Amino acid sequence: MSKSSTLLSLLFLLPMTLSISCTGKTTQPDGQKRSNAKAQEQTATKKKEKKNMEVKELTTQEFKEKVMNYDVHPKEWVFEGDKPVIIDFYATWCGPCKATAPIVADIAKTYAGKIDVYKVDVDQQQELAATFGIRSIPTIFFIPKQGDPQVQVGAMNRAQFDEAIKEILLPE
Image (cartoon, rainbow, N blue to C red; front, side, top):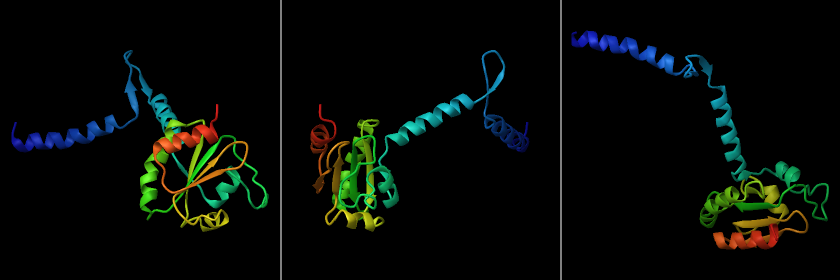
């Protein structure tokens, strides 16, 4: 077989191979073809679980719905959530905020299902930052299910986060 006919054969077989491999069908040991629906469903479930472990960005409106509606209750703290909350008020240009971000992300994974972890970009959510008097960043809110939030101004290490969670959010 000449070099050009080999190349021509490869060019013909390559699209055929790709079309067969991208159909979303698998052949089972019994020879029947089945859809990859179950595999896709498992992948979607894993993505959903991963999303639940991520730090979620909050807008002012979402804050009012998930944490506290200060328009309805301007003079008292009325918590809207069903789990304790950590909120990281940050800015994209802030060095200490960048150092805190991976710790906050790890906290979200470690305490997934027990604590909701949010972040608020003070440059994007200026109303929210002004409402709570955020002047220095990072500012971390620890919000228990019952009682008033506790505020920490400045970067925290992992041990400090764990201690605050133990004392404020998940006391035994």
